Image (cartoon, rainbow, N blue to C red):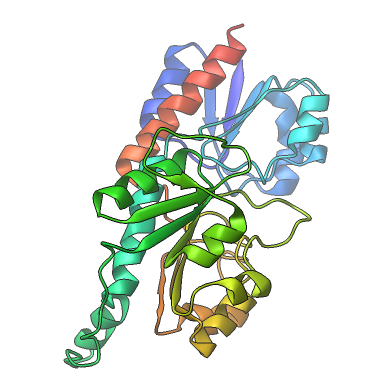
Length: 302
């Protein structure tokens, strides 16, 4: 059996697949090439770059598994794959710790002006006075929109820092953690810092837009390490400019790489940005490679 690895996989995962007796082809294909070549493969493993569309699935007449090394499945036509009886696999828990740590890192960055201090000191400035009014995370209320694997890891770290944690997730009714589950509106109204850890649901628009920001505390901090589009970038920029939003930490964007139209948000002095690297740690990538390889092996060996 042949497996196409389109967006790369850690060596541990590739070695596992080969040891299980599969032919592994690691090759990045254009959408047009993928349509022509997919019929040769029994499984495809992607990350976020390759789109496994209805047309690709239709052309993949021998496909027995579609796997995504990561959490989201928005680049795969899951419903059509299911209609064809093809399992869609992913690794929802493998990168949770890494994404959670990045969310906390963005909180520290904007609360202590790390993003701007790094820039200004390298330009020969000494902005001690300008950045003398940082704030502690301890004692603040952290609101989590989304309380799955990643949200829970963020909560653990926030509790360790002495924060009060409230969360909303329509799929979570109870928890044994020291976290109060409340409505989305209560999270938005009560929190000093709001961190999003939820999928982007097509057709529903952003989870946080102008209306939600208007309901937030004056000087709220917003962290998005989830998906581009779950926070309206237009509304966020307006909130930053008005002072309603004190700061933001952003790892994901509506367009990736961002366009010139997003420059005002990315260059805003009270914004900490990273280029969608939430899961980009050695530990997380090894877990992703190992977990997705094992899931593919389990399906193909049935």
